[in-house]
Image 1 (cartoon, rainbow over the protein chains, first blue to last red):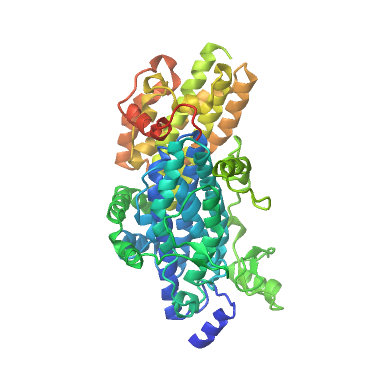
Image 2 (cartoon, rainbow over the protein chains, first blue to last red):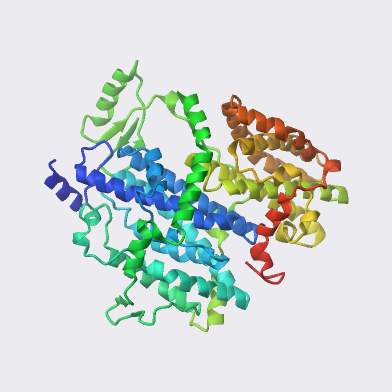
Length: 297
Length: 92
Length: 197
């Protein structure tokens, strides 16, 4: 298959395996996309990890630990896919902590309260699962296959998130306030999450059928699924323009694309602190990996 | 012997062959599972290399790993009542 | 369940709770991703064991597992100092894990012989999960035993492991316990007792 034939093959729904011959550009795009996904799972651990120690009941403690554990597990699965494409995990981790590679915008922000923990599990994971479900049909089959397990596990995170939120909303005035504050705080990053609304035909990730939907399509799906859930709890969203038009399309104020660019290029409120933390954890345990490697050799 | 029927699908266990070494195993697997073009790929793995795990202990009911760990229905009803929003009977 | 048994069950539950809390600090930052997932399950198991043990005692006392786990003051906990230590070093963590599992196996064997069928039954259940922890601890022990820092950690922590098997030695706590307690009850204490979370 030459590159043009390959393109037509994936665009007609064809899938390829790790051992197939892949066009260089396709391989490079795959690595970039999948690596960023792996990075995001791994960095997504940090905002929630802080709250594992503060979970207010045993059941919440277990569920939150399990959620963070799932995310680490996802990054493990995802980095293995990247490794098969030719980029070793250690190099991915090096590039992550040196700031060379990126991770999703939402993981650059602080988690200020237990309300944030609920909103992350409920709404951030909901936004993420929409992107991830669109990867179930990825043209690169090994990636599509692991997405099945990932999406299945993410669905538990949303349940956990909803359970936390509903419990808070049925609780004291302070608890309800925690939720409203968190929704308000996360709304901007959530609206930026799926990226700017470029036409999908111009999005190389769509052209190669790495993802199967455009950015705006994903955002509309998120709004359609979750705004009614937010409203029915008596919560409000900090966007006076948000409404569903007669033709079923959600209208909203223009998200702050400058903020998105600024944040994902490594200038988010928590970017540096979290990368430093990762770097430190990695340096402190380097001897363990070396001990195991020496043993395997 | 693991085979993949079509591109994109997972490789699934399909059977086994007896062979003197890897070369024989390659040839025999190819013949047994590929001669009619019924596979797009085969993985041939010595049985001794397979680690089997079939005990998954859950003595203390880890329901937070399952759907039944999150009883949302009653909570949602209460939250809707507090918000004064209509309960939609078709919704969970 | 007599008072002595209650006390013993609470000691073990407190050990499992605090160790589980400490082990969960590794979730997200363990030396390898695969190990991260494995060690996180161990942390969850320990907390699950604590919960089941608290539930046994809670029924007798007319309280709940959560109240026992969170709503006592730090000096009321009966855990051994070794589980309280904040050890964000893998050699020390594995040394404690190994020593703890060693002691826990002995303790569970005793509990399995209890006259109280509920205690014996629960101990048997817990032991089936701990068997996996022991395999995990042994596997790391075998891998790290040639590492000087692991040998040093074992030597340093071994004397403290004795407390796990002796009620008489319990009662003293490290300064790390109130620090941990502060953090683990921070959200819960922010609202009146009885608030649902």
